[in-house]
Amino acid sequence: MSALFVSGSGVTLRSLTIPQALKLRRVPYVTKEPLMQQVFKNGILQCYYSHQPAEDVLEYTYFSAESDWLYTAMLEAALNGPEPKWSKDDWSFIPSQLTIDTLANQQGGSHILGLESTNTTILTPAIRARLDCSAVDWPSNVSLWLRAEDSTDKSNRGKFNGTGLKTLYFPEPAVYDNITNTRLTAQPVFPQCCGNTTGDSGQGASYKPSVLAYWTENWSQEPTQNFTIKWIRGPASFVPYVKQTEPTLFYSEPPAIQALNCMPSIEASEARVTVDTTSGAVQEYEIIRVPSSDDVAWSDSFQWRNDSTLRFSNTSDTKAKITEVTTRYV
Image (cartoon, rainbow, N blue to C red):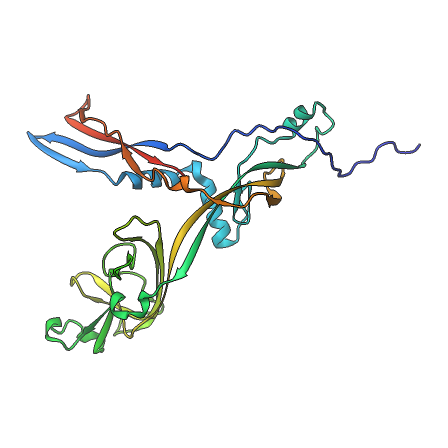
């Protein structure tokens, strides 16, 4: 008896409307964050300020189980991990409510039920974030970012004698070039990290290749969204500098430096995306409109609004001041 049916892959072409529960945010996202507390203790008013509200918003965003996809993207970039769902290359696509059952109901038939997987091509908004970076000029002016200290100078009072060096080179806390200013490390202090202690016996001065690498935001008289990436490399060690109890990083010779000024850019477009219905993995895509800058992403950036009035709590002599913080894309 001859076979009547043969199983295998195939293609069906239908024009369907697929439910889409998500969309790009066009109105600010508002969170309520504590700004200040006032406590009356023994008849004395004491004020306690919380973290910056922006810090609280970012902590919730990046350290919440609900934002696990952020870590997925980090793993992809740093460790060549799998791409997040509904993403490919540097584009992310707005997910649709795609399931085998949804497709079957939309087509008014059940002939695709029971399939383990199927690819579906849809039209959906697309968004990407990228960096536009260029080299900066200030590293060529060594005095802007590196401080040279003469160990034989009377003002140093012999505090560098144990180094065996005449000149020690300390990275400055910040760079001021009259155009754009930036910190050299995460905090505006002389670096106290990033030395190379591999195989250090603790006996005598040892100057091993060390790398100081940070990105920090820029500031100037005009608002800026740029930041600067720095990579400083040279033989380094530690010595008390500002305070005798705080070892500070220094270089035994002028280190090499590279620096880039970067501007984050968020762009939006429309895309034709082929996605695995079951897994959400993007098989291929086509950007069908020239990408345009999505400037709404930068509006309402950590704006404070509608500070609440100070009120005593019901259980203690405490007042709390609450502020609303708005963000767009976080």
